[in-house]
Image (cartoon, rainbow, N blue to C red):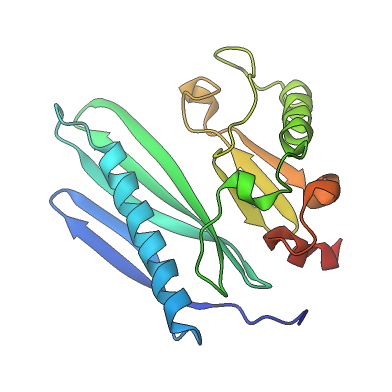
Length: 203
């Protein structure tokens, strides 16, 4: 397998609608036209989903947002879209939606697709999250019940970062609970030719 993969080129675009301004990335000049188009479609759909989920039909909602590129190497583009909604005096709300895509195909991967089917990846991640909750003294609304197969996550260098939305795990004041999971902890459950196997070179 070729170890050197060029990062994808991106530019910032602005999505505007009544009371909505969202900055989002667009892939440009990709050598695989289909993959580039699919990545942009995935980003656009995820961004509009974020805007839709932030809207409150009974309240005047003003939404602003931006994005963060978390990984753009070895054929993996991982990014987060961050949206903040203001409700005219009511408590503001923030959501973070992420995508992790194979730049060769444009496919976006849910968490469970990163691992060997039927493997104990959830047990490994849950154990590490439970350890971090205790070590970092993270306040919980209820006990930690474990991650979902489509849990929010992104990839940053050689780390898988699992996170929860506001109120999903902790009180609002605690912010977004992020849990970095070093990839070396997951080596046994990453498929040999899987997306994350490309990053094992650095471990």
